[in-house]
Amino acid sequence: MLRLLCVTAHPDDESGSFGGTLLTYQERGVQTFVTCLTPGQAARNRGGAKSDDELAAMRRKEFATACTLLHVHDGEVLGYRDAALDRENFLEVVGVLVRRIRTVRPHIVMCQGTEGVITAHPDHSMASLFASAAYHWAGRTNRFVDQIEQGLQPHYAQKLYYSTAPNSLPDYPHTVALAPITTAINIGKQHMETKIRAFAAHTSQNPLLERFERTVRSRGEVEYYHLANRLKPGYAEKEVETDLFAGVTG
Image 1: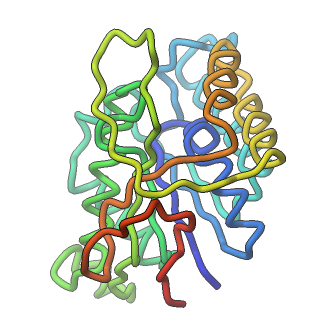
Image 2 (image 1 turned 180 degrees about the horizontal axis):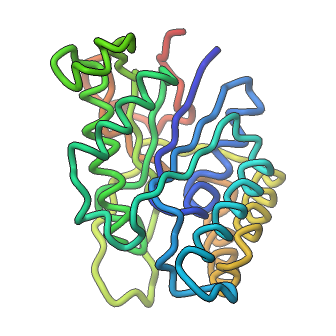
Image 3 (image 1 turned 120 degrees about the vertical axis):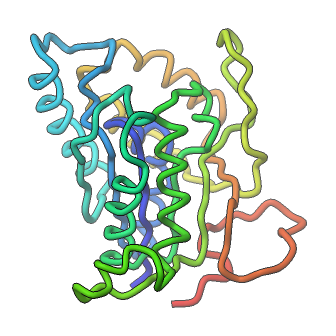
């Protein structure tokens, strides 16, 4: 069975950046996995939570509900500190993701772009850097050797994708250099509506819903990606590809 692993920074990223794609490929028989690095306990929108721990618990439940709507095979939320991923031990976080890759053995890994996508959130950037390093090092016998000694085998996913967009937010105060679009996934109307419902399941973040929905609908029934790396060497495709698994072997 084909497998796809998505790495994100916060609960709601799985819906906002990847929801339609997760649904599309699950419908095609692909097993989908999501690893979220933080429980989002530092969010500005608190959902009535009286403490970071209360908000973290709330957002973990919201994540589980969204993953159910998106038919995610296996979703997990780790315990790293929201708004502080740039202060985490780089090797430690990468090691956790390497273990996840070696366990799941995905054909495709996808994450947010190194710029932090349209919001340029530093946590999004760090999640991208962690996931990119893990993508490469999971396949090498000289990285995290202790895992191999424990029985895990090296695994190199065949492609790494960054989520991207055709334009940045018009009223955003900072310039954002988005990754060029190499791949456009048509998610269809039904999956777009489910993606919006999955984002809305993050009820603590509902103040963001109206703007999110307006942005998503303005782009149409498409999610955009940048092919960052692939195991098969060669020139990039001349045309925008329409399938993450194009050229992937089982």
